[in-house]
Length: 206
Image (cartoon, rainbow, N blue to C red; front, side, top):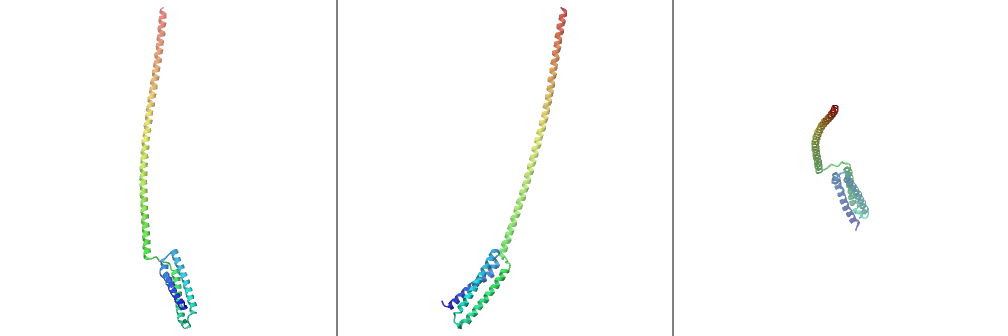
């Protein structure tokens, strides 16, 4: 392949690389954020280095082209160098700008925030309902406990009253038995005295 053909081949390579750099500057970098944006900037810098290498190869091939054509090709190399400088400045500007989200990304982000807010509101409502339900259940349980305690208190009072009545009955029975025992003893004593008196009276008559 002649130096002329090689020079034309390098021109084609430069056009492809410069188009890729321009696309990154105008579209890719402004639309990206974070690590993706950094990767796009690094890729553009590598392509700029590649474009510089291509221009250097053009200059080397220019030495082998006919002297009569040097001026024409030298002018073309100058144009490529100028274009590359513009791309470098464009990359610097694109790298220093803060990326702005697209309309679609902004709309999606707003919808996501709205959905998150709705979910939080629903979650708060569920928690409030659960708290209200627990409070009602607790109130019902407390009422049941109080009712049970009241019933048990009444049962204890009835048992105590019954116990008092039973104690009273026992005391009355004991007093009755003691009275009967005393009366039996008295009857025994009277009977004994009567017998002794009778025996004494009979003895005297004899």
